[in-house]
Length: 147
Image (cartoon, rainbow, N blue to C red; front, side, top):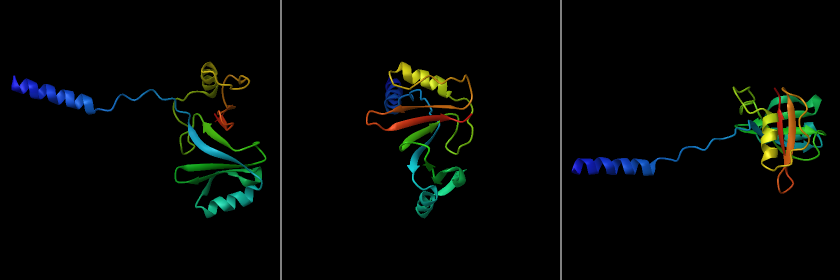
């Protein structure tokens, strides 16, 4: 009886200290902050002084992605009306294609069903596409799928 009590106590303690099961998560893909800049070269030079290095893009095309560790900042000259948070479904944090991912069209329908204004429905059936939402404070959030 005493052994059964000890075993039962151990099971109760183990159950009480285990983390609850993880909730299903919707991976939105790679994340970066996209900045609307006036001068791509001046902005790139500034962020390089902070320790960022160019990871993607081309200043001649007026866009670069700067990286410092796991932090990414997109610099875009004349491409966006204002700064935005950006998610890239189908890309991991290094900008590499992931395995299975939630297509941006499916994500748009899911967010619309949740009551968010997601703009016009994406017209294409597959491949690259994007849409944006705006948070309650007016900050744009871009979902930009490249594959």
